[in-house]
Length: 70
Image (cartoon, rainbow, N blue to C red; front, side, top):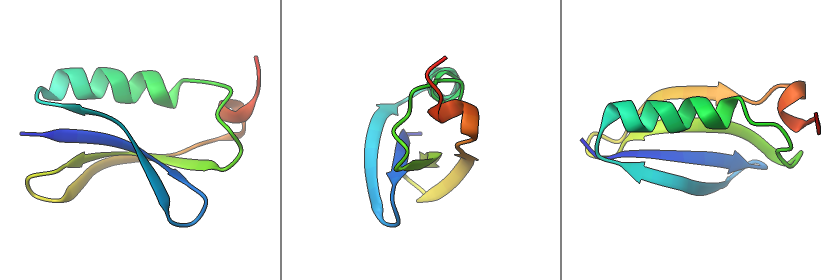
């Protein structure tokens, strides 16, 4: 099952952060990204998608702490 993690910037721009064959690897990276700080203010969400089925499996809306420096 090919899985992709992407971030959404602004209203319509998305950027791929990686593709994974194993769910465990994808979830580990997804977790790392949602706990990251210093995201640019324009980044609003992180999504994990099953690219075979074109289905979003998880989505996280960045919070204030994700944009802070510490």
